[in-house]
Image 1 (tube, rainbow, N blue to C red):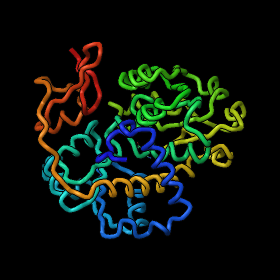
Image 2 (cartoon, rainbow, N blue to C red):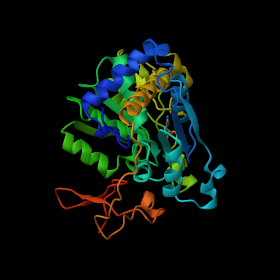
Image 3 (cartoon, helix red, strand yellow):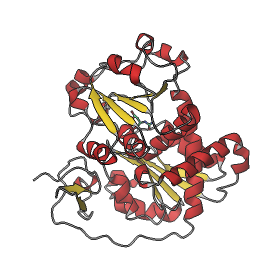
Image 4 (tube, rainbow, N blue to C red):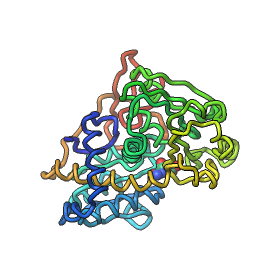
Length: 358
Ligand code: NCD
């Protein structure tokens, strides 16, 4: 693996992913062999948004590797509350640390951070966009619990529009042969266009469903998600969506014996607690796999990046600015305007992947 940063897991090759999965397994079997691997190294966890698992699994991963941790989980306690830009915060902290793990409510924030960081940057969730290390966790879980990452029928249920874990998972699993995706949601919470584009380009079969009950019998993997309350414009709109999809033991009667049920957690009400006792439920195991997955990632990234260097300045590719109010460019005005042009001439923002509307 020679990636410097981890912004989008789909940027890694299947060989890189395989290396990480295998290393996670080796560490899982013999964690004490790795207890000094990161001795003398420091990771910074910069969490501008709430987190339990991602933050703590990164922190324990680094501690179990013999390294140390700095950071904040509430930007109010940092100079962010005095109006410091993302650029300046990252520029400074990257002098102190060997890796930066960042979660921020704006889409494209991790990519933006990586432009000003001397240390490698890991995206721990950029708004409703992507969450690559959750996907690494998910594929490590699938590999060790299911035995394969291809030829799977994967049901993704809940908030497909705002769920960054779902976006990253589709981007990554669509690289594997024979996977089929069923996106189970209300019409208001369907996948954003950039995810549909990925599915189209991959050639994977995909479909939409509004009924978990009707789709469940087809699935090899069911990926349940929380309705992302914090991404809704109003409480009213959230209330209208919550509680529609609930996995319970009755629905599970129709599912395959070999089904694996995943959930990135936190769960609100979308899986009833009695499902926890069903052997097909793997979401708590998944949270544990996440720690080993992150240990493997830190080991590989630190092995790669001995030289700390400020990346070269990037110039705007276009004069126009992205108009997505959730894009990091809407708050950090010094960022260059970066777009890629699709085959059909559409301009897509490199930070948030939203199309520039004409
Ligand atoms: C997810 C997230 O933050 O996107 N949680 C996590 O990192 N395990 C899912 C969620 O918050 O619903």
